Amino acid sequence: MKKMIVVDLDGTLLDNHKQYDVSTTEYLKQRKEEGHIIVIATGRILPSALKVTDNAYFANYIIASAGTLIYDVESQKILLKSTLNNYVLKLIGKLSTAFKEVDFLSEHTLYSLGNTKMPLFYEQKITIKQVTSLKDVTQISIHLYHDKWIQSYRQILAKYMPDISIRIMQDSKKPHRWLFITNPDQNKYTMITLLAEKNHIKLSDVIAFGDGLNDLEMLSKLPVSVAMGNALEEVKQVAKYQTTSNEEQGILKFLKNNLKM
Image 1 (spheres, rainbow, N blue to C red):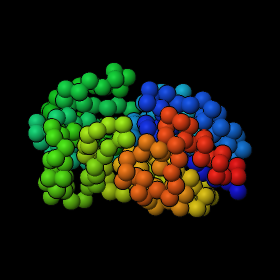
Image 2 (image 1 turned 90 degrees about the horizontal axis):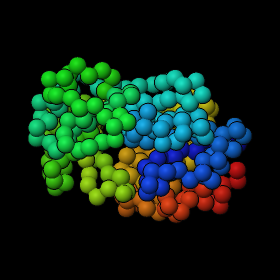
Image 3 (image 1 turned 180 degrees about the vertical axis):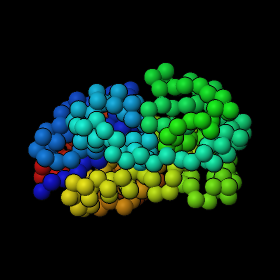
Image 4 (image 1 turned 180 degrees about the horizontal axis):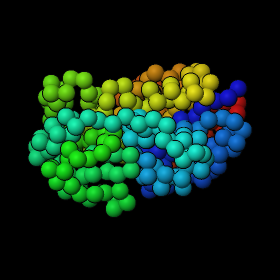
């Protein structure tokens, strides 16, 4: 029976040095060649996801930018993309001086307003005047000066953008939290359901691995969901299973020990 295996990147497939385990990716590649569907689901923008996975040679699809874009690896084409409107860009641009850093993620680029030094691979510095001229922004990440303000800012932004999704994000390897803004119902789980339907796979035949808060939807809603050993406690609480950490071949061990594949 055909399965779909979904893996997050940072803190899941990638180790603490942002490297993937070759044994794991080769195992996934073999499953792909047998006809199973392999999906990368990440908060990274598409070029960054491709770079750290050697062009995703072991996968069929990439769900990038926290579930706002689907990329077909074989055809090298974007199948779906959800972009934010100019009202949202303008509002966040005006409020940006109140935040430590604001990142506007498009299909290929991360535009940063702030002092955080991102990898030059995908960074472009912009001014507030340029914000509304940005094209195809799929997600906005807002980093605050203090984590204790996160719920208050989330509520304030929700009043001005009632039809926009404003969620809290944290990776298992990072102590701080931040806000990320997308169109409604744009997350890893909704994109997984679309890919499962496209490939005629039941959701009961989807296996998903994750560690951070942007994995909550898929891990809480899928019947076979696996939290990494290093995952945040909120993630472990909603996942149906748990495996070893991203430093201990957690994905590979779970698949070999629990699935007949």
